[in-house]
Each structure stands twice: as C-alpha cells, then as structure tokens.
Image 1 (cartoon, rainbow, N blue to C red):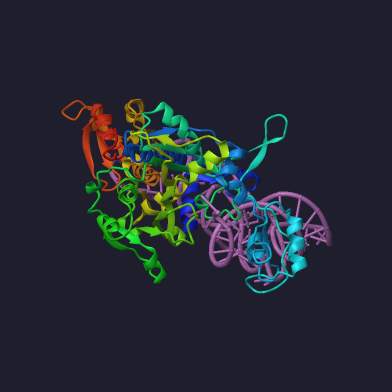
Image 2: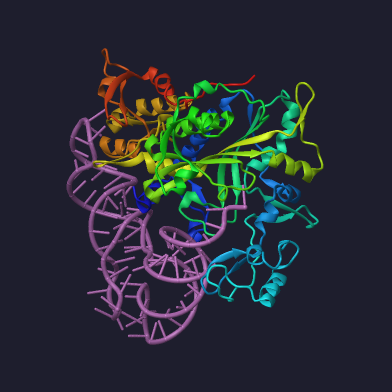
Length: 503
RNA sequence: GCGGGCAUAGUGUAGUCUGGUUAUCACAUAGGCUUGCCAAGCCUAUAACCCGGGUUCAAAUCCCGGUGCCCGCACCA
C-alpha cells in the first residue's frame, strides 16, 4: 500500500494520529489510538517473550527516563550532540564546525562559543568543503537532546534519555549485586527515548518521542558459551560491506556457520544475529525475501561499535529497505565511560579471581517503526476486502462477536463477548449494519476470528449453544460450542518463545 | 535547516487559474424500514474550506506571515 493510503487508513480506524491535531499538530509526535495502543502493546509483549526469553539470566527492568547531566556527559551524548553546525549559504550543505576548522584547529572546538567559532571562520577566510564558497553561516549550537533544569535551585541540568541503552548500563552494577554475579547478564528495557530530530518525517520512522526495546547483554568475550549448533545451518539474507561496495543492493543467502568459519565473525555475535533474524521472520512474520541483514562499514557505524548489522525490511509504503532493528557489538566502551564518569570500578570478579570489564552486545529494536512496518507488510487489499493479516498474537482485537439478528441474538452474544474478555481474549461486540459489514470492519482491524450467534445457537437440538467461528484469512466457518471458545482461541494468542539458555 | 510541492466533512475529493446563490460527489458514521452469514437497497441525520493578518462591496479562491504534511539535500554520537 502507498504511504498516503496506509496513513489515512490507520488514522481513520483510530490506530494513530498526530499529537495536538486540533492545534495543527506537532512535528515528530504521534498518539496511538485504541487499536494502535493494543497493537503496540502486543508487539512489546512478543519482543519480551523472545529476546529476554533467550536466557534465564536476562531480565527486564523499568528505569527512569530522565538522566542527570553527568550521565550524558560520560556517555558522550553531551559532547557529540552539541557540536555547532555551520551551513553554506551558497550550496546549503551543513557541516559540523570541527570539520570546517580541522585544518586550522586540529584540537577541536570544545570550549569555544558559537560566536568565537564564527570569528575564526571569518578571520581565516575558511571555505565550504563542498562548493568552495566563503559564504558560511554563523555556527548554530545544535543539540539533539531535550535538556532542562532539574531540581529547585535551577543550577542542575538533566536530559530526557536519547536512547534506552544508557539506563541499562547504569543498572549493571546493581543488577550484578542482586543477581547471580555471573556472566552473561542481560538487561532489557522497553521504553521511550527522546531526540530533538532536525527533520522528523515518515510518521513513526523518525519521531521525537519514540519507543525502543533493547537488550544489553554483558559478557566475557573469552567465554560466552552458546548452543551454536542450533543455529549453524540457518541461512541468512546477508549484505556485507564488500558486496555493498560493489554496488549490490540485494542480499545473498549464507549459512550462519560460514559467517564464523570464513566470515571473521565470533560465534556469540552470529548466534544473536540469527535469533534477531528469526524474530523478524517467525514472530513478526515479515516475508524472508523482504528482509536483509546489512553490515555497516567502518565509516558508517559509531566508532565504539566493533560489529554492526542492521535488520532491514523492504517497505512498499516507504519505497525501500528500512532499519527496524540492529545488533551492535559495543565492546567495553559503555562500562568504561561510565566507570570513568562515576569514578566507580565497574569491573567484575570472575570465578578464579580475575577481574574483567564486561563487553556489551546490544540487540535493539524500534517498536514504533515495527508497528508501521507490520501495517505495511500485513495490511492489504484482497479484492474488495481490506484485511490486516496480523499473526493472531499481535492482533489488537482477537475476536468480533456478532448477533446474526440484532433483536433475538443480542443477549447471548453480549454475554459471550463478556465471557471471552473475562478469559483474557480481547473481544469486541458489534451489531451495527449487515453481517458482512461487521466482518469487513473486523478484517480491517486485524481481528483473526469472528464469532456469530444465530438461530441454531438458541434452538434446542444437537447444535444448541454452538456458534460459528469464522477465520479471517480463509473466511471458513465452523460450529464450536460457546463454552469451548476461550480456550480454543487463547491457544493462538501466545507469542512464540525461543529455547532458553543460561543457568 | 535549505529547496520544491501540497493543505476543503471521519476518509478520498469537486470548486482555486478567471473572487460573487445554501461549497460538489462518493465512501464511512448515527437513526429508521427491510434483509438475515460476508461492505445489498430505500429514507433521514451528523459533518469541512489548517491558523493569523491584509486587499476587496464580497475571499475556499488573490497577497503576506505562521503551522503541518510529502519529496530531494543535509542530519540521524
């Protein structure tokens, strides 16, 4: 489906809409409506069942969204997000000030005000690296973080976290102490992060407040034992750096074992890359031929990332592959920075007495982006029908419940809907319009099942108390005793779970 | 941030160039009749010119500013 059509449909059905719509909206902010909120919650639940489910030693925490200034200074966000930006008035290209000044001030621009930098640029007659013009703008301080006064004195500053990962790094020492004091230790966070994006765009793809699901695995790079045989033969759609540099856009399929044997990647990395891929393919059910694992080059990835593959899915609405998740091997960068910043020793003592600053493997996932991607991939036209073919455990509503005839069958249908809800099956009662119209509404909302109460339900005989159960995708119907419905439906509403490792 | 395009009921739209009756149509929504297992039909109702200023006897229409959206560039430690 095209972008405009998809967004209109999601808005019309109340999945999501712009924040503060009556004031004209606010760039980069969106609200989820009833169906969208449920869908998002199910995506989070599926993620929680899968990634923290990889090991008994992986745990979900719920940390604060506000970080004191010392944290973002240590993490590097303060420094790296406040570099002044200079734009060329001639060709409109934008550069970081230290790029323009690198010849005359190799030590960087820290400590200079934007005005002072501007004076250097003018005095030295510096030129635009792109077009050679001297028409360079006054530097503009640019910070992607939302910062504000914290506390009553107004002297302390704090920031909305620009990524959830930092919360996990801060939690590591406490998690070590309250846990088994063993590696690997996984800390998962599902929550909001905030970035003052320059150009928010494409609805859920670049928002200023967005939800991330991230698992940080702290481990000993010399000893991370995993059942690699369980993934060795899995074939992955890979687009590695040499292939990309040769101009290829499409992935090539290679077994995971080969990435280790001749691909130069460690087992622990490939193992988690496979499980990330399986989550996208088997849990969110993106077609395998639309997924690719894109390796980031030295130039593209952040300097502290030693290995990085993005999980990308081809989206028709956005005309291209979009990053929906990633696997980052960050080394010991994060704990090292926070060790320095806090003055605490964050290394741990291993069995045998050796000290180690754990390394971090980060499995990251954009929740909002995947909500959009699920709609892109699974919501489509089938003749006259518009059907949202979500896996049942992701569907916002599990079942529509209808009386075939409004007057006669209403009471039975209403109480059946209540029974299903009480049993944990999200059910929606609907009596408006013809029966076909109600099926259509539920197809569009993604409900995998519809239940209809009819004359045979209420008449005495062998079919008394049975209702028709209609399948969204096949439109097939069967008669099921009403009391058995909840158990029957619930079986398909559990998200898949991986095999666990760990102690 | 820069450049280009766009903004009319819940959704999609006609009308804007060339200012002038009660702002068009379809779908959706609500109520009624009818029907009774896949968006049927008939009747009725609800519902819109993004915001602010200007020009004019008169502005959805022309001008200025703002906001938002799309595309490209840039940005995305």
